[in-house]
Length: 313
Image (cartoon, rainbow, N blue to C red; front, side, top):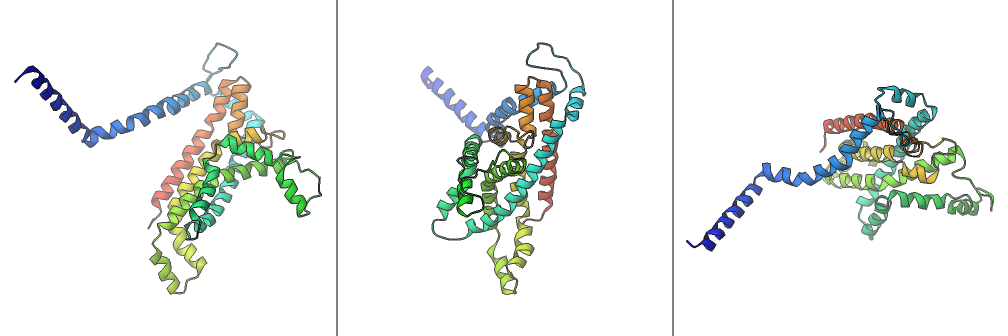
């Protein structure tokens, strides 16, 4: 056999060997997951590791010194009254927003799973808030809540709920500012929850509801005895996504209220940014951020275990 022919034979054999390796699940699986693992380690794992290290130190942006101080940073953080307000607000905002979301998402799920003309366009409109970047949607809400140019003020004036030309300081009063932030968070996470629940509703065998209807069960009886038990695992997933998105978000508060008026709308994400980046205390900012980790980890484990134990279909 000539040398070129032998070289071609070797190349073909190597190609066949590589294809044979790629056909093996234990080789192809890790190979396909490698880019995702590299991304998670580089952009999530390493920053999280540095946050843990900083939280046990006295690191600041104005000093080159770096000393481990144990739990001293956490003690200062817990004693900070603004942190206590931020922690309470984060939990309250998340609970209220997701309670509103799950009710409205269930209603939208029924609407979107029904057959009507233009359904695809309605689904597109429903998904827009989720596909819009948080900063851009928060800026739109900032304009809509402007005390002078707010369309809400104009609408309320037209229906005579407020006097014409009397501005409402939506972001200047504690209660209205809190309601505005919660409304934005609910509006932002509602589309994904609605689509998830719509998928769950369409996957329920229609024969179950038809048989129950034949037996004389009304809408509410079918809803609580058939739909809700079957929808519960999927609903848990929708709530989990909403909790994580709302609990960790700081853009809505930062753009709308800067945590004000006073600290009425301060949350853990925004206070961690103000303390660690603007205030220069990297250690305390990291410690504030760390408090989000065990809460979210516990919620994820609890809800996923609950969903796995629920009988689905």
